[in-house]
Length: 99
Image 1 (tube, rainbow, N blue to C red):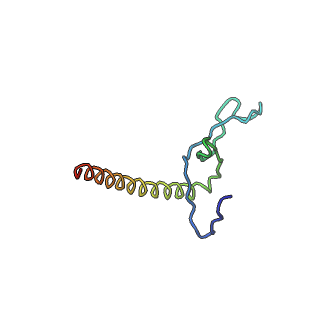
Image 2 (cartoon, helix red, strand yellow):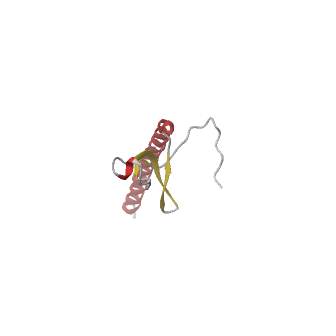
Image 3 (spheres, rainbow, N blue to C red):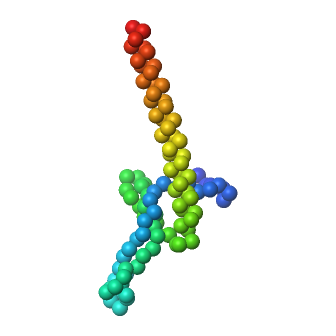
């Protein structure tokens, strides 16, 4: 079960924002012959599958900020992991030299 977050904690989300375009299927709707219905959506990975959440326009700013927080945190972790690999490689090279 996911941990509950405090309302004061900012959201952190993984995924991609996109515009969902679709026809509703009603024969008398404008989308049957003209422009399709559009709404913002978030695609995110879960258990090896891509899931989608349709968003309201009022959610976009918060979701964009949450995606940016995730990407920033991931960039920091990737940098730390790269540094860790550099340290490990240096140790292995030094160990081989001392033999």
